[in-house]
Each structure stands twice: as C-alpha cells, then as structure tokens.
Length: 408
Image 1 (tube, one colour):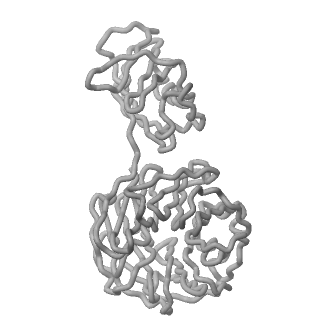
Image 2 (image 1 turned 30 degrees about the vertical axis):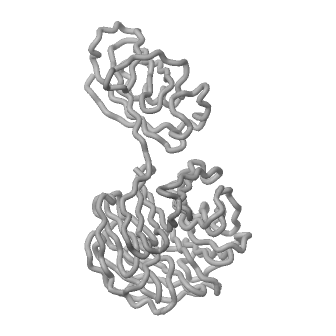
C-alpha cells in the first residue's frame, strides 16, 4: 500500500467529557481542530497480522504509550472507510493534546500511523495607524477587500500581505462586496459608491448613487445586480453594475445598517429600533418583519430563503425559519454590540463584537462560544469566511488603528 495523506475533522458532538473521552480537550473540540493521518507500510518493526501496537506524534522521541478504551465512532468509521483494503481497525486514544496517542489493531497487514493535531486559531494580519476598517469581503480564499477611510485594503494571498487602493473620496467606507469575477464595490458616507473591475488592483471609480445620505451596507449577487441601504430607510438598487442606481420604497424611516440578498428576488435589510425588512421580488416591495425588539440591528445574513440571523446592539442575536416574517432570540452571552454575522451553512456561523470578541456556533446558534482576540479592547466590525477554517475579521481601536485578523 502506497503512502497517502488525508485530513479528517472531528465532528462527534459527544466529545465533551475528558474523563471518558481523551482524544481532545474541550477547548480544542470547540475550536474544531483537524486531525491528519498518514499511513505508511510496511512498518519498520515486524508485526504479525492481528497484532496491536501503540504510537504517538512525539517525533522527537517516538515514545510509545498505553491507550485507553475509547475513541469516537466517527474516527473509527472514517479510518475503516479510508483503509478498507487492509481490514477493520480498532483504535484507542490516550490522553493527549498535541501528542495524541492511538492504539491501532491491524488484523491482516502491517501499518504505521502518524497522527498530528493542527491548531486552528486567529492571528493578527494587520495593525497599523488609521481610522478603522469597516466591512470585509472575499472573492475566494486568496483575494479579498476591506474598507476604510477613502480607500480599501486588498489582498491577493489570503491576507499574508495587505495593500491599499485609494478611491479619492476622503469618505469613510462602511461596506464592501467582492465577487468571484474580480469585480468589487464599496459604499460609505455622503452617498459614496465605488467600483473596481479588478479587486486585486488599485483602480476604483466613483458611481452616481443618487443620494447624499450615509450608506452603511452594499451587497451584490453578481457583477450587475446589487443593493445599498442607509440613512432614513434608504434602499437603492442597480441592474447594470452601478451605472444607474434607483431608489426603492422601503416603507421605513429608520436608518438601515445591513442588507443581504440571496438571489435576484429574496432579500433582507435591518436597522435602527429593531427594524427588519424583507422582499421576495427584488425590492419592488418591502415588507416589515416582526423582530420583537427595539434594539438597533446591525447585520443580517441568510443561508436560504427561510433561515437567517440578525444581530445588533446589547448582544442581540435573532433567527428566523420563515424567511424573516417572525424572529426569535438566541443567547449570545455578550452584552456589547454584535456588529457583523456570517454563516457558512445551517450549523456553522460567526459573529464579531465590541471588546474584540468573536462568537462562533456549530449548532445554528443554539449555543455561541466567545473568543477574545488581542487585548480585548478593540471594536470588531466585519467578518467573512470562505470555508470553515478560513476567515477574516476586521475592526479598529479607538478609531485610530486598523486591524485585521485571520482564522486558519
């Protein structure tokens, strides 16, 4: 059997009791660590078929250790499916963090496993003087943009390096939208909307928005069709890539801070005093959802036409299962503003907050786990993920330091 590499993510929800389950400690399980297995045969020592051997990832000493009698079933099943040609395995995990120990029983062949835990964590990518970053969006895992005063930061290497591109407005950019085609948009104060045909470059051009009010959120579903929202219930849309922006009647006079569209028809917006709006015809008509609160809502996100979340001031997180008509609260566990929310699917989501807190959930928001980045004093304003193990959060400190963190 040739050497092969593969990755398996532990998903067993029962991994919580360290007394009986010693594969990962609870902190690592919450952080969704990834375990890598490498199979090599033959092993350097002769083992007969059906023999049992113990190994661990202490590559410095290659220390062997006794195991305990439990390993999650998902690990066993995955190993069996990957190595079905060499028979069924019995695996047992010993207590370890970054030196996980397995007992591997091989019924009919010789095999050695290296088992390594990769730590997934937030790391600071940018910390420079500025006026604060508001909004982040990625076209793919490498190319993304983030908005700040009169300009955007852009990256072509997943944030290993960030460059700046001025839009010439001297206005605070509050939101950005990056498309897989490379087209990008930004919006900001005083009705500013800008566009680039290449978000990996430095050329941004102003568009005529038709308003002088502050715009807080921009969202495009493709190169041509997009929406912005802002002061006093302002919603505008374009069907030609921003050449023309047309006013829509939102029916609200409250400031609208976030807008999100799933497709050309289904969209949502949220804002001051618990305002939530929804449309099923691209914004030709906007309807009011029943948020049940009067707290400002700052961000809204949907994964399909029925299921979505909104977040805002005083730690509010709401969710809906009927397209935004009715909303129910979730317990965030924080008291400060939750400024931005993002979901990859029905289970996995993140939100960013004041005091440099990132919340994460793996059960659709039934429970939210907090993590404090840096010194815990900065305001995090925007969050975006391209996969479960690749995401970015942006923010500022006292409006004078620009911050970007990456999760990987």
